[in-house]
Length: 222
Image (cartoon, rainbow, N blue to C red; front, side, top):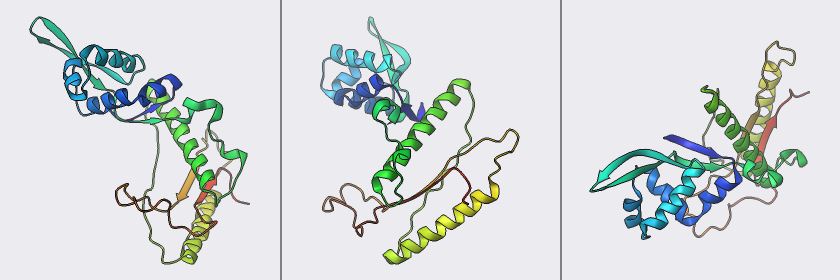
C-alpha cells in the first residue's frame, strides 16, 4: 500500500468523491475487508457494497488482498491501494489553474495556482517513475515561523527572495551537458488552525493586501 496515491483520471476522481465510496476507501485504508465485513460497518446490503467495490477496483483505488473461505463461500478481501489520495488538477485538465496567466506574489489565489501546479507536476512524476520502476529525486522543506509584526514578515520575505535568487544565480547552468531543469517553489502563508480550534475564525487574520507570498523561479535573477 502506498502512503499517497495521485488520481489523475476524471472518472476515477468522480468515483473517489462519492460519499459511500469515499467511506469504503477510508475503511479499506485501515486494513483489508470483505464486502460482508464492510456492509456491517457502513450499514448497506452486501450486494450494494460489492457494486461500489467493483467501481473502485475498476479505477485502481482498491485491489484484491486475498481470499478466505467462510462456510461454502469464498470471500474476496479487498484493500485500498493507498493510505490517502490526492486529486491532481489533471482530473480537471480543461480548467486547471495556470500560474502563467497572471503573476501576483501577494495573491493567495496565485499561490493556490502554483500549489495546484506543484501537485500536478509531482503527481505526474510519481506516476511516470512508478511505471518505470524508478525513484524520483525530490526535496521538501517544511517549517513554521511566528512573526512579531507585518514589518518583520515583509523583511523575511525580502531576505528570502534575495537568498533564493542568489542560490539560483550561483547554481543555474543553462549550457550544462545533460543538465536537467528543476522548478523551485517557496511558499509562505499563515498557518491553518485545526478545524475545531478555528471554528470561530472564518478567515486568517491578515492585513489587507498581504495574503501570501511565493517565490517561483525558473531562470536566474538578472
